[in-house]
Length: 201
Image (cartoon, rainbow, N blue to C red; front, top):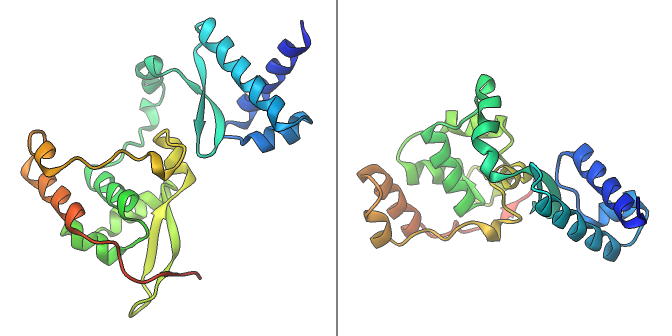
């Protein structure tokens, strides 16, 4: 085995063992090398996985690198997780969408957009570590501000919040949304960012 092949194999083992995304700086420390060398090894590992048609591939997510299953194998992987299905309900997904696009945002502001109470949805999202408290708003009562987490980025395959898709225009949305969903989109577009800076705990 050549030296580069050995180093690539070690990198693959480290990423597999880590599970979560690992930054290039962290990999350089673990592998006792420099970030430039890590970048080269990542490129080599990616090529090997692609050229050999392996079941795993490399993905840059949440500011780091992670070994993940190929998208074309998702239907098979989903059957593996059917026993412990953790799919979000529609209310929870709508609440998460509002938080993702409007963060940091308070519970009251979310309820104003959705038009219903969101205690259960917030509790579920907190339980799954998809959202967290980001501080408190400088307003009467100092309500909690919510935002998304690194777990959210990993679950949706995003490297950062800047990778969130742009909201469709109302004209684009009318073709594919029902009345309730369209109303929610209109609220999202009409709502302005909350005034006041976060006040950390």
